[in-house]
Image (cartoon, rainbow, N blue to C red; front, side):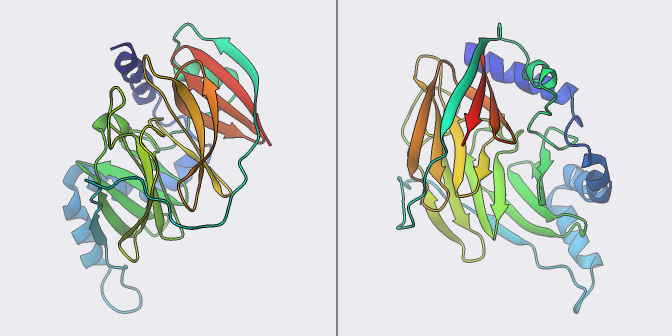
Length: 276
């Protein structure tokens, strides 16, 4: 219950501080606001309207692809791939935080929370990601074209974080179950959206952080729970294999990189970690 309460506190804080992300967010969000608003209000209908308005021919919007990613009964999968060297992670400081709000610590470090959307259900990088109902809508920035509508199993406590990433038509996501360790839960996966194929699936209990970080060929994520051991994990971006782990005192929930430093907020500790 303590861990669940912590999640509720963190996300209540995020709701209160919506829009505190990157400085250039307002410009991007202005371009996306009409699309995002229509999705929040009408869901899939807005995608159909958008595609109809785009017309035909060379200027027509690309057809939206609706994909259901079925992960039921799928065990750990690791294709053959090049070996990847993990980053060297060194804990620089470990401070008890008295179970504080995540934003308080990040603001003291002059950092933004990793969520960069104006609402609880959207965020962006090179693309705009918007959760509506049980589906994740992925848009092109600037043009507003909806490329994909994805459905896959994950606990709804976790859809209000930037826990998805599209890179070169490969989608990286998290399937999370809130609670103690159990089979087929809390893992990352990579999915080839163009060929409709699951590429890899990490082991159980490798990820239940609210966000993850892609740094070159490495994914940094984390897992932990009340009476279980808590770790930062590094995964091979191309195979999903765990290539390194760093034990922490409490479960990592939010990860913020800046330059060669990683700032990790947990239930009751704040970690500053050097990355090399």
